[in-house]
Length: 440
Image (cartoon, rainbow, N blue to C red):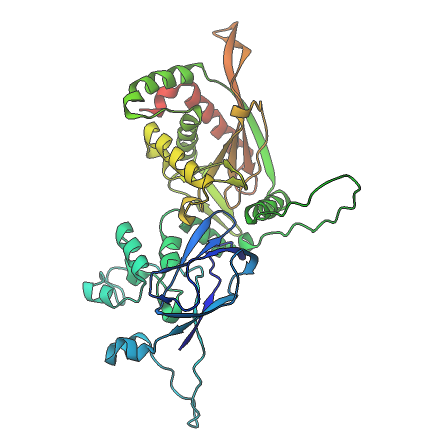
């Protein structure tokens, strides 16, 4: 039975991608869970797994092809007959055949498809409700899921019976499990509440006629997405900007003491690691700033997941430190280093950069004194951090020299009032200037 292998949707906002590399060739036999290709999305290069068994009969899209639309057929697989491959009643139960229409006319079997899409979020059954009660091991055994999806679900402690599959015949695949676990859920919920959040404004194509010597540089998928997202943000999100000056002397002193004690563990805290913790604690203490605007609704987050802006050769990506307010500084430092390294190699998984409740962008290490950052929807705020520098400063009612940093918060005024934003910035300043609260 022929199976159409389609371009997968590897993130909620993905509309097209680049087929970077085929990992199989025509004539190869593949099984469920085998890796078929590497797909370059707007944020990373990801692996695409098989969800059925069969023989690769035709590759329709050559590797290196970009702009491949989600849902486009990229290859054909000759699958085995479902009933013959599984046998008996189990096969009929797993792949039910449609009843013929009135009049006895037989329905022709359409080609099967194999692709990823954003799964529906199925609520857990309520105690005592219809079909309530925990799933039994027998029901888990009968769930149709790829081996890789089962392994990921097992590692994350997810109940497969509550997940809607988007693979062939409703099979649960890797993307289904990843999309509803942890960090990615908030972005999906926001997009469902307000479909407008999923539409990205296409920047107008510009043709420039010039005699100046130049070369045409093709935009990467990441750069195209950055252009669309930032255009959307500035056109649709009313930004307000609030700036505070933060004295860093106490924070720098504490950082030195902590690094001396952590040296044996190979951990070296950065100022940015400590500011991530301060940002997360401030969000928890001012929950009105830990929100997302979603049309007629507001999402009020119960934890602070901080997106950290990381510059990579193809643009900018924001890996996420989840629940940063409840993590130690050493844990934050280790996670930032690991995520940044994989971000630069293009190896981040979707749940590691999708979601987040607020962002931080630090250009102080490049000598930038102060700047206003653009909000990354559906988040409602981003903190822009400038360089710490020696400045004249009033200390204990006397003029002195202190190390001072300017920090600017950009807030979505639809979701956050100026007074709440000001309260947040005041608290962030206090946490950074009295940093013992970061380790308490």
